[in-house]
Length: 104
Image (tube, rainbow, N blue to C red; front, side, top):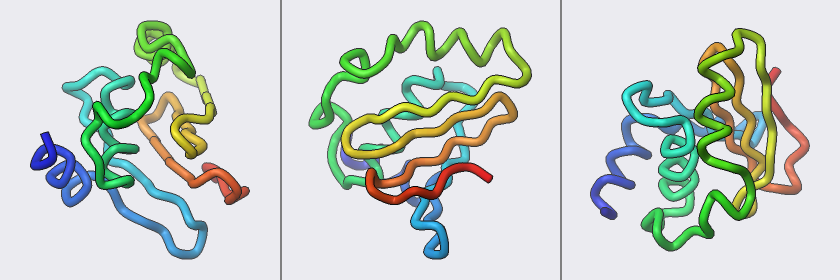
């Protein structure tokens, strides 16, 4: 599983020093909820199973379906010490809590 997390970080996650934000190239073949968990795990350098369950923060099924039925949705929520922001056009941004930058 750690190999998957490292591969995810190396191929999908970039860090913007100017904003302190991580930008993720989402894998559209995976549910959005999976993208969120794998992204935070990759940023933290841990296995996804070492993170709190996403369901403790947001309903993963609702998250997955929200962006399937709306072209203008934007959603932000806190998860595992990060502010996660998603939008309907495919942007996924992860910012450590305490950093006020968000999608622009």
